[in-house]
Amino acid sequence: MRVLAVIVIVAALFVLMIRFVEPRFVFFPLKYPQGEWDVNLDQLGIEEHYFTTEDSVRLHAWFWPKSDALATILLIHGNAGNLSQRLDLMRRYREHLNSEVFIFDYRGYGRSEGYPSEKGIYRDARAAYQYLLNPLGRDPERLIILGRSLGGAAAVDLAQTAKAAGLILDSTFSTGRDMAKQMFGIVPVWWFMNIRLASEEKIPYVRMPILFLHGTLDEMVPIRLGRKLYEKAPAPKKFVAIEGARHNDIYISGGDAYYQAMREFIEQCLQPRKPGLALR
Image 1: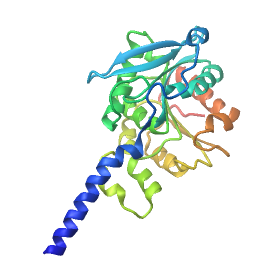
Image 2: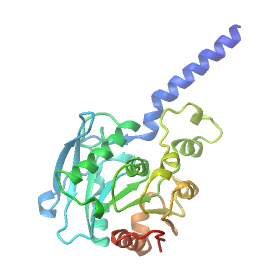
Image 3: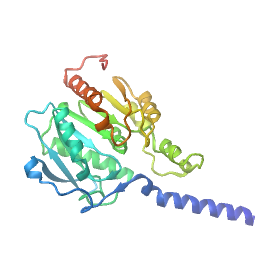
């Protein structure tokens, strides 16, 4: 009985430890002033915005409008740093995709209030979407939801209920548990995880075209996890493997193959949709 009691106590302590450290394995925020904030926003034409979530958390965002924009991109970034480190990414999307870009920081990141959590990032994405529609007045029929890495989980959650022209998932994964298996191998950490990030369960309910992009040399999120999510997605959908691209450099090393796939997808999404649409 004593041995059994010790086993139970050790197991309970192990679970508590996993639950305590789990957010630190998922979220890597940089709070202001950490980051790359030495930017002349006015000179670039970038607007600074603040908005509030349904649970009263104040979030910070940058919006880079474009008068002749083909589309508006709601950019939901990855798990590390803050939006100040995504200026080059915004610039490339704006130029290569002829689109205006709205990016926000999750709670606990950058100048945003609060502390990051799974439910929190879903609420943050919903609040950003609503803010783009009102007061910014963007048309959901010309809106593209774009989630990178961890942001893909928030993007899929949002796309279940949001109205938008299309969804782009860049270097994202099937579930948090699949990522834990990738990270910890035979140690069954995933049995005790509270953070699920269960995109695989949600994506069948998305009712808009979906483009998947993934680097063939992605060292953080294996391409097989991107393909696994793709298999669960409803049509119309398309998967594009970017040869030689890694996780954090796909938007650079992917070159024209990366941006051409996005451009073609956005152009198709903005055309009047017909039943049985097949993505080229």
